[in-house]
Length: 166
Image 1 (cartoon, rainbow, N blue to C red):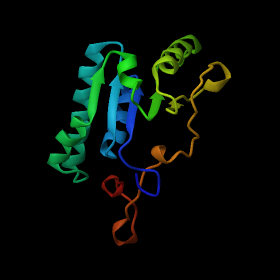
Image 2 (cartoon, rainbow, N blue to C red; image 1 turned 135 degrees about the vertical axis):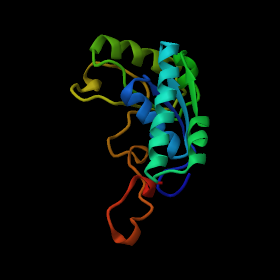
Image 3 (cartoon, rainbow, N blue to C red; image 1 turned 60 degrees about the horizontal axis):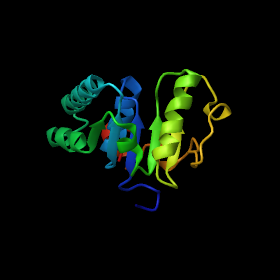
């Protein structure tokens, strides 16, 4: 891990719909190992196809190289077993349906299977998740380094492009 808190983390992304697959792709592009969980195996196949398509788009726009596609996909391990996804994860981000009862159930499963010290986070937009879940693991602050894109430099001092993110 470097001085900014980056390095090879084991990340679990819980939920492989639109946000989950993008979060998994982001972490994999940063060099992290990612376990991508969805209870429906067919959704995992669809998510990986979308990630491949996203990467191909980045290649078309000159924001990634062709070789990056397989490298990124090789860092993502799909699973429909939540315990498998979280057992060895350093950082776990949940993004399932925004229904308190669903999130409570998922966080209880995560909390039971996650290793001590794993950081739990939620991709949530309209609720304060910690008002209705009870977990024994640390919670990720919004400014945690894993959530912040790394800017190598903006060429010519101009505006940063996705390929400038580390």
